[in-house]
Image (cartoon, rainbow, N blue to C red):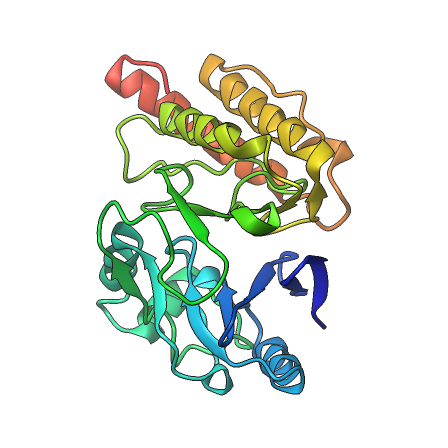
Length: 273
């Protein structure tokens, strides 16, 4: 079910990893950001939009991980966008076929795959989503995934953060496609900090929606975690260990894996991070 979080901005939360799909109402229809995950939920979202008289006129994927590249036939044939690097990465990862990619990623059976990753890359340096609605600024960076983008709906004071600034997920670095994943993540946090003072509502890709009072706090929490990784310290982070939210205990395994890979990388290259 859609829930309004700001004027003309609604979210649909999935059972899968508390994923948030975002609907932005425009003059001629809706922009749908990170459409959702499970087949039944996507169909429900399409029903909700239809019942409210809204047609999807554009889609956007914040980054090229499979759970942000999904679509459903009932959502229509609107253009679906991502950054140029996001779209190129999605094409590359799906080049061996959708079924092979699904098997490799362990995608659940309840996920519709027919329209996976069919996005168009916007020209490099594009700063606004092309659609007839409130201006949506694209804040591209290289944290978490290639071509990752946060979106700032300036007229509504809403920051759609992609897979950053979550209350349940720690920063998950792109440890494969970048020379300095730590600095890339810190640079991305600085970009988000630049708009934080104008944000009234924060929508992470996974986790709880936050208010204006949580934006800086979540940026600082993510920064503290990344700095602890860089320095080889155990982070005092409530998302890791016994304080983790029930059902999210596996995040500690993600942390352990990141810490181990960064240590091996540092030992191999003789450089931090």
